[in-house]
Image (cartoon, rainbow, N blue to C red; front, top):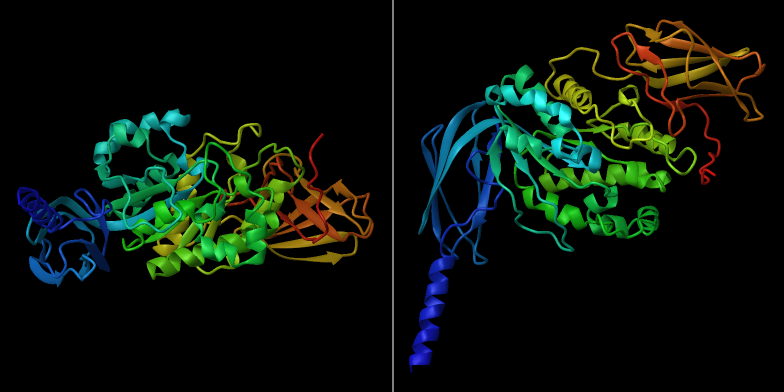
Length: 468
């Protein structure tokens, strides 16, 4: 009898313990909620447990109940930016979330160049430490974890922006958030979810990779390593899926180096990933990304092909790309240390495209069209309304070829938003390439200061053999 009584008591105790309301870690004190939106709150409680939720910005109370699987979810309406506020949840237990701000929330993801921080070489960020108390920024740093199946929770917590936290936080994300906070004058919430070395497949739902012949074949070429996951969907399941109920303004992304051996699939992979994220969030949010920087890889032209694939992803709606070839001092370092200007360029994209605060000067000039005119090739650009300039006496990294496919250094004349390309070696030109290599750093810029994006006008086969 004592044994039966003990088991019964333990069962009742377990039921009582599990009756408490529980929240996922992404919902907590210090968080930023997306302003002027319908935002979800969710969690777990005893089946059919009644939960009252009171938000201090309007002092309204709404009621919801857990379902038979002990899950609950409800919507709340958020006001325009402000705070701090509280949210009180009352069931069999009481939870009070304090110091909540209402503002703009962004997910910041990718591989090592997004992850890079003070501890991993971006020591220049220490110049920011004295002013952190003046910023209205909150940070959520997602721990590195994988899962074969989608997870409903993750580790981590929202924190205020101080030097100890910023030291371990993405430098690109920090500078991005700082610029938004300054120019929008609203609180900014940043969710950093990145992992150095990861190919984009791991951030994409597994079924979408496995059911696409092109993506599946490319994914099979991702060799296992001891340092990062390569299985499709593994970081998506553990580091993205747990937060898809959390309303966001958009996402920024810095990745691509680890997909250099399969560039022909990268455009479709990116488009598949972006579409999957938007579907999971049920929101067509903006997605802005960084074109990979010049670096000396061990195979010819692989980085050029990845950059080309990234440029093609601009065909996906509500995407934007920043070009950073001019921010590199050492092409032997795969982690350029200037993360400040990368973050600022991403922020300017968001300020211009998402928030409508900039009219121009936030997009790099981009190849629009070209035509052969005698011995010249006339190349026209988008986003170069104020004209183009060459920084230096002679153009760099621009080449021209005829039908023999032999490229020669080109001469360049600038006329408004076009360049006229020629060479004495090429009487009848067919193609032009600019900065189309692993390490090439060009010097043609828009007058507003942003570098022209790398391009080629041909679709010829490209040498990707190993460099001897």
